[in-house]
Picture 1 (cartoon, one colour):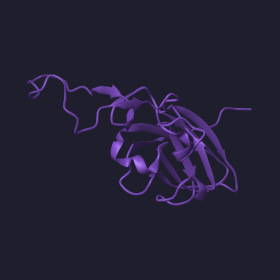
Picture 2: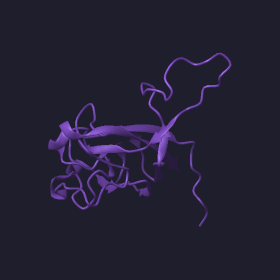
Picture 3: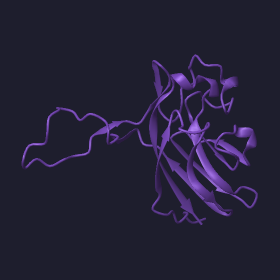
Picture 4: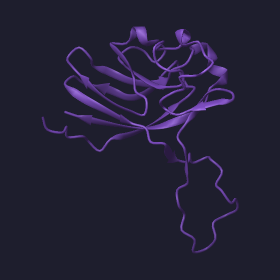
Amino acid sequence: MSDPNWDAGVDVNVLALPIHGNWTMAIEYVDAAKRLKFVVNDTADAPADAPQAGGGGQQAGQIATASLVRNQWNYSRDRACNANGDPKAPVNPANCLIPDAPPGALIGKLGGSIAGKTSDALKAFVVGSFCIIDIDDKWKGTLYLAMNADPLSQLERAGQLAVKIYRSG
């Protein structure tokens, strides 16, 4: 079998605490007979509003360089993790959106509502730091991403993950 022909990819920032509902909309519509590849690197470009190291303005003649930060988020006030979550988290996984995934892990669903849980999806899955899924004729719709967390723990979550999503036909 030959390697899939991946597109250039789309960058999505997935907030630990989405602005609306439980999920961040990643791709408005994914149609059938596609493959999706998710990649979450250990580091990401610092958000535009992040303070820069060294402070002060840029000296004349200096070249601006992008600063890299750890690509992680907080699932509670003092607990951070990457896209693979924290299997030792002091969180009851039964209360999370996907109970058999580690708390804090990056998860996805295809279909359903931005306000729904995974039960309203056509397909729910664990993404982690790398994942490839096949989409068939039954699975099409909006692609959502989120932190696997208890929906009632919103006040404790913070940060975001930079995710790259590739599609193949």
